[in-house]
Length: 494
Image 1 (cartoon, rainbow, N blue to C red):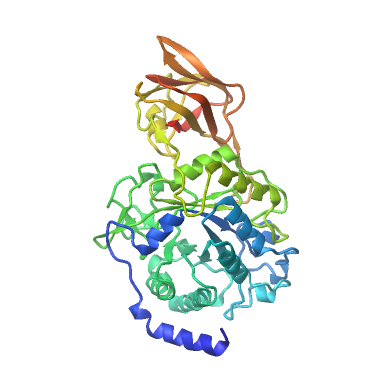
Image 2 (spheres, helix red, strand yellow):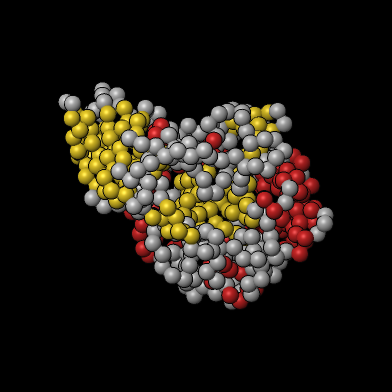
């Protein structure tokens, strides 16, 4: 589109924005939410000036010349997403530093001013069309570079955002999702979210929109509600309204997640989108050093957990300083997609029947703490936030099961100690449980069906070659480096 036509379109659009749809109360998904739920599984891509400085957040002072990918290949990014079975790509277009991955006429802090002038937003959008994936974007509300951000009149920066979002929503085809971040740096009313929502819906009516930390415990307050507490309809409130779905990066919902949330006395339906890193170090922007990744077992279980109950998952797979996704990381998500059996146009796979859901649990010991509840029942409550912890390094937990129900798979999410790596994001997880047994109660005796002679790893998945039925299943911990602690044990008929 030439500049004259773009200006005419912009003027016509702004003149009729008042006709754009607004969010309506209800207890069923609207069209944007239906399409989001159907997509279900996307690839998050953090790439920008931070990639070239080994930083997660920067303040806009990194020289634009630092952005200099030597083999920039957005086609490879989206091809990897296609091969891995992702349904959409979620691209960072502008992070908190203000650096833009497109040629924006409203700033000089963008790719057009860098040594490599490729419009990355266009390249990714074009590749999504080529490979049949939906295109989604992340845009930071917080901007540590743009001068108007510091103006006393918040509308000055709101207009800046609207101008940039108009560029994004008029130049790059259909955009299925807008993921907004950094809202904590201003009061919710100072972001102009109603204006942003109307603008986006005018250009892309079925675009799903949200702001990180969407929901709070009390209306008008800023204490964001943990997703693990969202197990009751019409109990919690919007912090950022309007929003089409819930976000709290990188927290996980429970298996009993609810969808109804309140704003000014009315109830709105909101699914949840999870975000996790492929990296086991929890880095979002790629680092110059090759870092280990999560096990495919853990990724598989997190996929099932996060896409259950009409929720969604995006997995961060960031390109490196060359401008390509590293081969071993591409292979990992492709392997995951093959294990899951993902097929285009088919529903996302499920994990099977949870025969241990909310089952009674007893433990040989339980740690006592006045601030934290370490009850044994936490390991079957469907939450990855609550946990059981023993008071001794040698311990057992017994789960009562329906002996009529069979199972052939067990997944264990162990609590692990973490060692922070100093950048505010990255960490190393360290197992406590070193040796253990899985036992079933059979004819008055405990029979071992699995012997773990090494640490559990990030997420232990035990696939049994045949099905079992029992009235009680036991995790018998025989060696640990600290007090054993478990988030969740899932006994599954797969």
